Structure formats: C-alpha cells, structure tokens
Length: 325
Ligand SMILES: Nc1ncnc2c1ncn2[C@@H]1O[C@H](COP(=O)(O)OP(=O)(O)OP(=O)(O)O)[C@@H](O)[C@H]1O
Image (tube, rainbow, N blue to C red; front, side, top):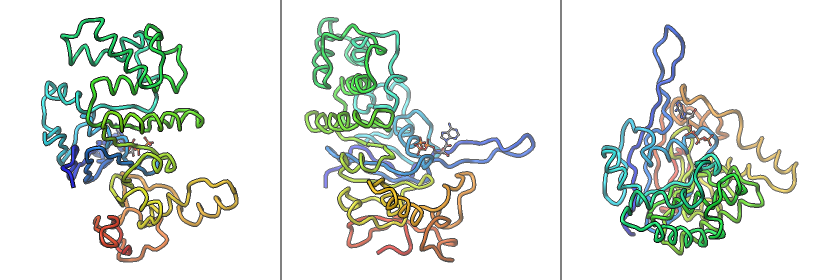
C-alpha cells in the first residue's frame, strides 16, 4: 500500500474544565489516543455522535488546537511541533472546508478577494490579473459564475457560499482537505450537490479528504474508508462498503441501525433497541470499555479491561471490542 499522506499516532487533545470555585479543574479528553492514516486519493469518513471529538480531531490536524500528546505528520513532516512560519507553508498542502459557509466567509470581502486571498499569500509574484484569472477558473470549476467575482457573500445562497468556501480551500491545489461537517448546515436538497461536487473535484484534482459528518448516509456516499469514534476514541475502522455491510462494533451497529428509514415504527424500534441512553460525560468516562454503559452485550470484563483496536475477520475491519471476531 502507498505511504500515507497524513498520519496520526496516539493523538490526544485535552481541555481543562473548571468544576467549582474550590475544586481543581478537571481534564476533558476530547481526543484520546487516536491513530489515523490517510492515503493518496483516499476519502476517510469520520463519524460518531455529537461530542465524540470529531471537530476537535479536525482542529488538531489543522493546528487550531494544541495536542497534549502524540504525533501528526503530513507528507512526512511533523506538524505538532512546527513554528507558525512552517504552518504557513503547510497550508499549501492542507486546507479545510468548514460547516457554516456564510460564517466562514468575510462579509466585507468580495468573492474574488475571498477565493484569491491564499494566492496573495503563497504566490505573491502573481499579477492582479493573473490572480483574478485563477479565481475565475476556480469559480467555474466549483459551479459558480465567473462574472459574479465582484459580489459579496450575502448575495449568495448557503449552497453557493459553500462552493465559495470550497473554491478558496482548493485554489492552492492542496493535497489534503479536511471537510468538517461541510453539508450539515445546508438544505437537504443542496447537500447531495455539494457532496457530488467534492467527489468530482477529488478525482479531478487528486485530493485526499478527511470527511467528518454525523450523517451516515452522506459519509457512505463519499468515503472509501470510515472511522467510527466514541468518546474521543476510535472504536472501528473499515472500508466503507464493509462497514455498512457488516458493522462489527456494537456502537457502529447502533449508529447504522439508527439511520432513518421511511417507516417510522421500524425506525423507533431499531433505535430503542440499539442505542440506549445518553453519551456519558467525557469528564467521567466509564471504566474499561467507554461504550459499555450503552452496550447490549457488555459484561464484567468490559467494565475492567479496555479493549484495544484490533484486526478482526482476517483484517476486514479493525474494532475495539472484546466480543467481536
Ligand atoms: N474549547 C473547548 N473547551 C472545552 N471543551 C471542549 C472544547 N472544544 C470541545 N470540547 C469538548 O470536547 C468534546 C468533543 O467535542 P467536539 O466538538 O470535538 O465533538 P464533535 O464530535 O465534533 O461534536 P459536534 O458534532 O457537536 O461538533 C465535547 O465534550 C466538547 O464539549
């Protein structure tokens, strides 16, 4: 297999949380020992309930939040210890598409200025006209009309704003793009258009994507592999087809069973059967396996021993459960 472009090893991100005037702050482990490899041309989906650490993981990769431990390397270069000057160079290869397109765009800048800004930083030798030409070409590529280059973000719909965000992310032709819930804020009717655009651009521009979403149907459509997170940890990784065909970890099974189906009775029955109770507080995670308090097959061993991620069914998947495989 090819060498990964992006590699994470035992990455931890923690936040101190005040618990009262007289007590010491507690530590919330938002990302707790995550390993990840992203290969050239691959789309890795990251799923899990709200609060499982997906966005914090994305922010750690992008250097927007400090890591407490572990290593993150891009094209063989360690990111966690690099200087801000090095980070600037890294932005050429590593870009992000955020969830809320309008909030991510500066309302006082024209679309041309927004999309062209990274070119100004990384290719300062370009003439103004050459830069605008690149911007127009990119606008066309993402399905915007180049003659709208002087318009402002508020003149565009949510879907069009996300196209602007994607154009800005791709103008430097990066190798890796972190998509943090890029369609969650959009109308359902627009979501498929944006996902299909990302798939098209990924092939045309030979991108590798980390695609974070809580909508499992969207993730299935775009991903080659999927990583399932629970309380800051990876509980399963498998090829997308394999994961959706046969989820191994009880949490993956619960998540997939909760995908809405047209029959409401069917859905209710499935959800109540598989995904019980609330996500425990990450400030007080359960002992042993973090999922055991909601797991239908947990026993005393699960309260004592934390299962590590291991290869199951001859390598068809990796799952962190004592009773899988
Ligand atoms: N800056 C912060 N300070 C304190 N706690 C934080 C901070 N950022 C995130 N957290 C906590 O870290 C945990 C993981 O949050 P994160 O936003 O990464 O999850 P998520 O899976 O992306 O959820 P969502 O889909 O709701 O964004 C949560 O318990 C959250 O409350």
